Length: 420
Ligand code: UD1
Image 1 (spheres, rainbow, N blue to C red):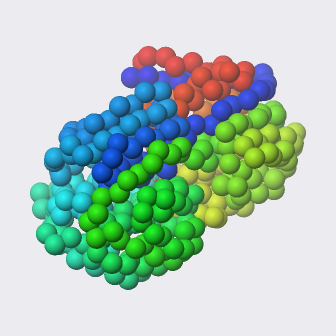
Image 2: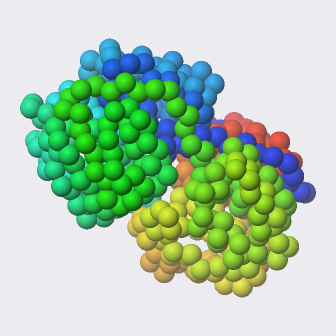
């Protein structure tokens, strides 16, 4: 197994190119199931989750040619409708094939994703909405079996809770449904917006894009002609490198980034003392020498993202004063706290609220990555910790960060990928 060895950094400087967004790429790849043509997607990140979803589609019979940051997917040969446990267990987002396969073939089986490190993460809202659209759902032997022999029908759906992949699943299911689906309390994440825009350009009229009420006019089983497109930049990867600049107090420039997707993150970094120069596709962080404490509550977009909580928690360990971070989305998303405590951080946890007394000196040691974003928080801490930090179990990190150690090394960090 690989691990990352990080030595305390002298200083960082230069440019980091941001990759395409993992969380946009996944639904967009699943969306190719709705196409009658070969779909070309550019600016995909080289991360394990993308390879996993492409493998899942290939196993079902699709042709996927993935080179560099581009894939061409042809799902016309897709013949199977069962996503098996061996793949789904490695990536919960595999559930994204349920909506498109069901709406196209009238049948789909997907292994139940089960719990994961950051919480239970049920998919009940996806299933309830599909039932409202006329699907018959049966859960047996660890599988969701969904059938809709006469196709899905548009209807009015109100999500009890905002769910990102749930919204994407229902948008894709509604795209080929018979009639109009109105989805209320929909997720407004930029990744959902891109899915809507691509579908809208492919003959599925969608109203309310970027709002909490989406109206999707289904094509009544007519497959789509989807033109090639480029995935939006990864706002979470960008936010992570902005935190690298803030925690080391070094100026960094991110390229291929969209500051418009990073409002809440930039605003919290500003509260902590940083300022920014922004162009159409770059952000330069001018960090302050003194990091100020902060109060953060994670919520759905456009509020502060749960996927940036761990990185800000690492940053808060170096702030002057006491920061409070409240996690509202996932019940168990503080596993990085005990690892940061082992490095000397002063953090106390009370339910979903972390209180961080900043200004402690961190020291390098062996730490364990517990989930994707927790991993990058440990890397950030390692950049400023005295001595050497070994981050183990980085297969979590490899799921979602494209060449993290290479990107950090190129701006002056001492990060090496080693074998256990
Ligand atoms: C997506 C992102 C993930 C991010 C999360 C929240 C992808 C591939 N992943 O995950 O990086 O951390 O959004 O921004 O885009 N819930 C239910 N029932 C459901 C579905 C969700 O109770 O059927 C709950 C979840 O347990 C959680 C909340 O709703 O508490 C939000 O989860 P959701 O938005 O669905 O997260 P994901 O789409 O899995």
